[in-house]
Length: 413
Image (cartoon, rainbow, N blue to C red; front, side):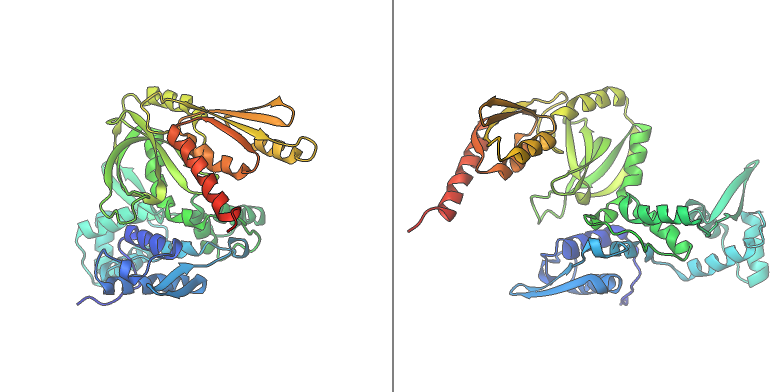
């Protein structure tokens, strides 16, 4: 029977567990259906060892719920970065780590055969060339070693790593470590320089994004090289969706919702001839595909469609999309509510906002998905005179919501 280990082999599993149980914070032990209850206990202990100081425990009738409780405006470092610094390794991994670095520490540049012979001569341990080759390739990919070809033979040496950061550069990295995408890279540089972010707090810092950053290198590479990708996406509307759906799509950009803070992959699905947005936190197992022949044409259509996206949704339309007009009429007191006028002007995005009568204004939107706009429109409850356009279901839902609110707050027995 295998024992418990704090180290991880599959970051994808750790990412799912931390997101579903610790970030969303509504699942309990009985909701863990992937494997046995013991697997849940192992996963929980592993994550608790990283996040113990920012966890909250709530007992309910369903069981104990564990979630992250951290005010991002009061912490200097994203606690989720700690998951990236835990990794599984074998006995040979440990030995080769020290053997290879010790042999190359004097600045020598050696080929594979010379390294294998040096390990045998200096440490009395003979490794197969393929085992050492794999470790050398891994360290080249991670930036610990550099490789150069001399003829057909690859030679390896230690990379020059400078850990002394000038104050101005250190401040920039401290800011980047918390404010930018791939902030864990900045955090790693600070750790290598034996320093920490002690300057910047980020009030509205979506710390969960760091768990999605692991997907971005492949997505950005595919965008840069105009390639397609294959991936598995899970439904956000069906919490019990454990199988997901396989997609082949052409990535075109990354969207960030200003309403929820969530990030989305904007992509074109050739089989369905449509654009679509996928939540990054619901994507797994990205695999790079080949170059997409019509990429430039599709990208031009993508740019043409963007002005008709109120948020991140393209609706359910084909290549060129189909816009639905939506007209909202507001009653606004011009003498006392100038701040409302300025707010709509600032937040209307792709809409046209104009005065149509005294204390009456209209906002006209031509968007793919009017439902996205309605979430924002509802924040002006009390000033909305009428809603025209959109689908019949959209209007019925709005008026139904108003009736329910009236019954809840205005009717008296």
